Structures are given as structure tokens and as C-alpha cells.
Image (tube, rainbow, N blue to C red; front, side):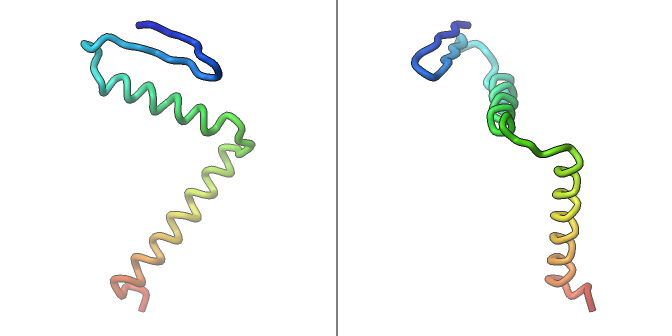
Length: 69
């Protein structure tokens, strides 16, 4: 593995024999860290958002299948 810093980026190179799925898992985690690094949301905020989203989705599904009558 080779790590290089260029301008405002960090480049990481792996040998071709490394499993792509493992690298992708690591990249997904790093992307998550990058996207959430400046977030002020608490775990409670996230839980409330998920709860609201699930309720909204269930209401939509009930309406689509005519279950809300």
C-alpha cells in the first residue's frame, strides 16, 4: 500500500491482489466520516428522522394498497 499527499487530497494505492470488496467497505466508511464530520445532529435527531420516515412510508404504502379505508 502506498499513501501520497497531493494538494488537498490523500491518494492511497493498493496492489491488484487486494479484494475490491474489502477496499469498498473501507471507502464507504471513510465517505460516511467525510459526510458527517461537520454534522451537529445527535443520535436522537437521527432516530427521530428515521421514525418519521418509516411512518411516512408506511402511510404511503397503506394508501397505495387501499389498506387505510
